[in-house]
Image (cartoon, rainbow, N blue to C red):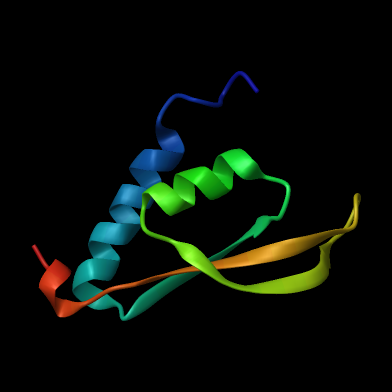
Length: 77
């Protein structure tokens, strides 16, 4: 908890999305369905729900939300 809310995840996502805008058609990640803070962050960066992996995580057993961001050539900077 002490390492949270310092902007590290946002900085990493920014780098990944900048790279993706130039080099990728899409970027996909998985997150625990209960991790609302992470889901909100991913949505802020343009990721949208693309699917679900039922019972993917263990201890505790939980679904994984698949989130994807698609890139278009217009995003290149």
